[in-house]
Amino acid sequence: MAQFFDSIGEDHRAMIARQPVFFTATAAPEGRINLSPKGYDVFRILSDTQVAWLDLAGSGNETHAHLAADGRITVMFCNFEQPALILRLYGHARAVLPADAEWDGLITHFNIPPGTRQIFVMDVDQLQTSCGYGVPLMVMDQERPTLVKYHEKADPDEWVAKQQACDRSIDGLPVRTTDRYLRHD
Image 1 (tube, one colour):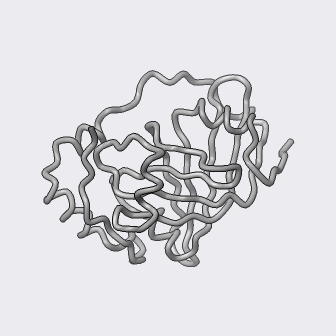
Image 2 (image 1 turned 120 degrees about the vertical axis):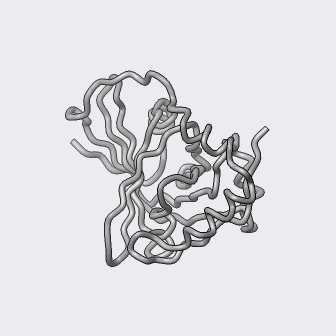
């Protein structure tokens, strides 16, 4: 049975902290609906009603485009171990790029992997938990290192040029692009 909450409680925090993957779903008023899987240690709970996650450059930037156009987002966590549970965060989010005033305060919450292009900040309007009985039991083997390795090898100027060339979503929506290749230490 689904339960709704107005904020992120301690049990919710613990469940989120155990998950190696989460999913984001966004849509603009017109066009495709986007559903993106996210891995790595990139998700942070900033308060009982605000979360953030690092976004590494990948195949596109649909989440950014949809949030700029509409702002609505759902983030979903599935517990692939026991107990069965699905947790969804509903709310509105925005992209924060390295050139933005908020960046310096937000980035302190993260270890910065190569390829980081932005931080998404979400204001959580509501949280829902449900049974998750249809989700299989699975065990995390390891993170897939390919994306980070790809970005580690990138020439910084070429990386920025490539990001700046991706200034539209697949439906033609505008995307603000980063102007900085972030080095991690």
